Length: 189
Ligand SMILES: Cc1cc2nc3c(=O)[nH]c(=O)nc-3n(C[C@H](O)[C@H](O)[C@H](O)COP(=O)(O)O)c2cc1C
Image (cartoon, rainbow, N blue to C red; front, side):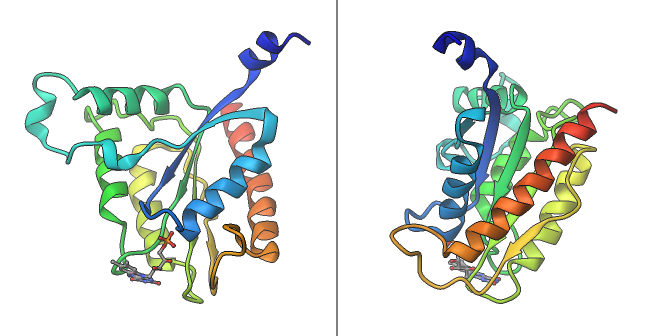
């Protein structure tokens, strides 16, 4: 198959990573997930720090350019995966800000109809249970295709050569297989 034909078939997937730090456990999980999709998908990981803080006034003259680009990428995606730490029992600011932009305009947000999967990696054994619960609640009002089975990968210590430990990567791989099935099945409704 010609390369250009193959490229045209790549599934667009967007990852939202709630941690901005370079050695983030959640970013390492996103890197592993990108490897799992391999050549089957075109994965983009927008830099959430480039989005201005949400302000409803900014909607009156049209979305600011970084927001418009971000929303358009999400709207072209077949599925969305959220990788996020728990900050103070909740959703980190950059991610909440991104979700607030995606939720607009009211009733016509960018996540409508998108399968969304939620992952949290944490040094705590609880695996970010609070942030996963909050993300479920928020995403469920933004799309009717939020995957109800979130994955919390807890008790993670240091990265090994920048990667998650093997057993955690394996758990994520298995969960991704289930999520992908859900995303494909839910599209047929
Ligand atoms: C501001 C802040 C708040 C945090 N709050 C929580 C928390 O409520 N629950 C928890 O399990 N871990 C909490 N942590 C610890 C994070 O889970 C831990 O730093 C994690 O590695 C951050 O994710 P990252 O590696 O992807 O950056 C917090 C960390 C920070 C910096």
